[in-house]
Length: 322
Ligand code: CP
Image 1 (spheres, rainbow, N blue to C red):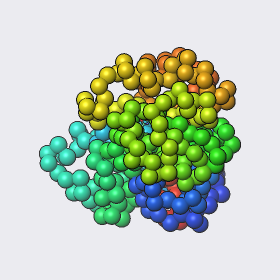
Image 2: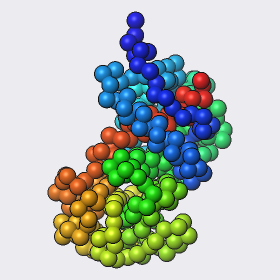
Image 3: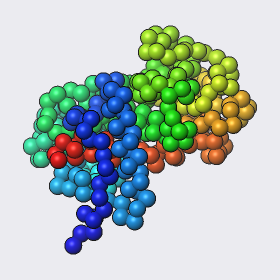
Image 4: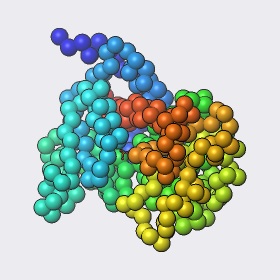
């Protein structure tokens, strides 16, 4: 007899969630965001039990389809699906018939014909997950689409802030770096402002244009001026794969002006959190020792990604099937 069914699924507030897909943070209500974070907290508790598996997605199949590289997101979605008792298929672009010219839509329809219930998609094109969500009965979860959104990253970031500081509302989050090309920044801005945080974007004018102010955030190009007032600094990766030379002339100049060095970290409040979505460019966005210091919650973010992704899969696919 299987032991996993004896571990109950947490008491979840699925009553306020009716979406089959999660493609962006932008359309979510405060209630939906709170439900996601509360559900993740319940699943984090499950992770401390002796039996860490729940039967919520038993009999369902999740396809983890990553057209761009990933470590954290891909592995944590796979682990989350296993913890929820789903079957998991991992697919990459290079091993799929996309290389033979098959369209994304046809690939996804074929996966659905093979009874995929959930498709987790990372893709270089903004809108790819939403495109599939509108054409499939299967749940579609956006694991990062171009420079558009990375919703589960924003959820694990806000979850970590709430866990460490006890609240989101009123917290001042400073997001530093390559905002123009960052799906992480776009999703974080949506989640944090909806939940009542104050957000300041910092970086060179080419990567942090004033147009972002219409999202209800502050924009500055002076990192040293904002550090003393920050409760959280979130350092974004310089995305060399999406960069253009005219936006980003020199790594050395970037680090000199916007890297979190030890000297700059001295300006932070003692309790301020240092975050980074990963992968880190050590010595560029952040001093290597700081990344490994007690002030850094970078690996806590990764750990929390598991509970957050369990919550997303459960709410989109598990609750619907119940
Ligand atoms: N933060 C993030 O998306 O990391 P991966 O690219 O490793 O998934």
